[in-house]
Image (cartoon, rainbow, N blue to C red; front, side, top):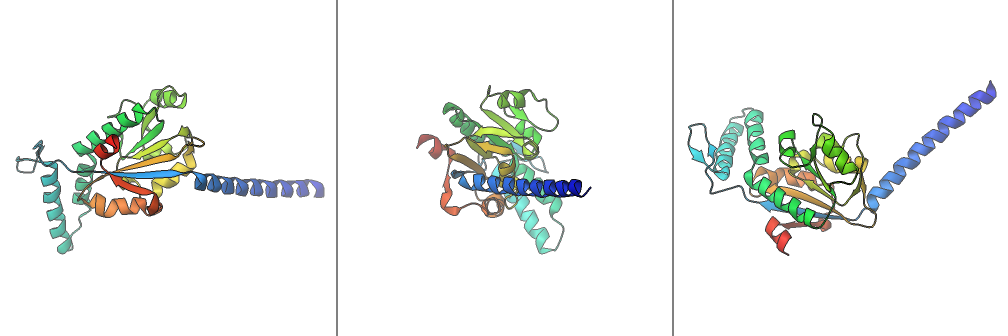
Length: 241
């Protein structure tokens, strides 16, 4: 009986040591990854009046953003709850036409270099705008093709990284930094992504200029990353440099 207890105790201690070693190895591996971080900034559209405001007037993305921001500022000054209207503004920023244009140009640029990677989107409908996508209610056709190496890119929502392992990743695109609250998304990369050995990991963040995304959300997303490794550009500068 004493021997059994002794062996059981040794086994538990061994398991603890193994788990601790695994954590150290994971942390060591993650720290050894060479990252190149690029923030791609774009303008909200100022010319195409494709949006209807509450009065039925046709306005641009920029005008819509400025109108909603003025309302939010007044409500804040009057100590009113702005969570609902701030949510509307957030969705509008997510859905910027120029964001999707920049994302598609970036994807085509990476595809032309035969790079393998993941595109993180804030919600399912955005992921579905790409040819290859995977989320909690989609089929696994594109997921399987990516895991088998038949395709090089896969669009995900944040939850798509939970419980899954993706190998030989050369880039990660964060379509909006709002999905990374003070490092939340970057932590998930360490859990579920296995980077291609000997190849620097390119991390791309897209951000709408002169918006709350640039002044608030982006700094939070970058707060746990080395500022010396971050460069700022536009999609045109990136493609043609």
